[in-house]
Length: 43
View 1: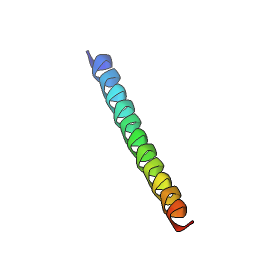
View 2 (view 1 turned 120 degrees about the vertical axis):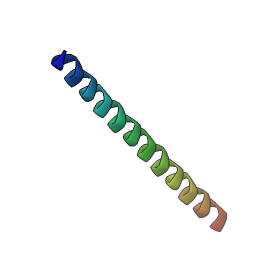
View 3 (view 1 turned 180 degrees about the vertical axis):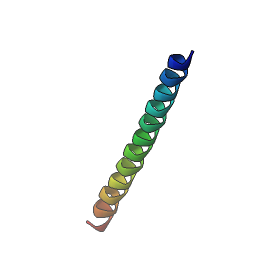
View 4 (view 1 turned 30 degrees about the vertical axis):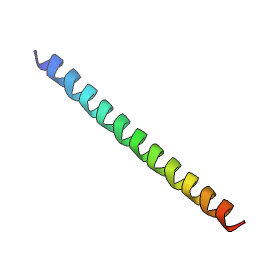
């Protein structure tokens, strides 16, 4: 029973970290695209 809870906690932490990483990557990509658009607009 205790081993099952431990596994659940590990899975939960892994899923949370994965979600945060995905969000940060998407956010960073959007910033990069905005910067590219700004450069194109200047030209």
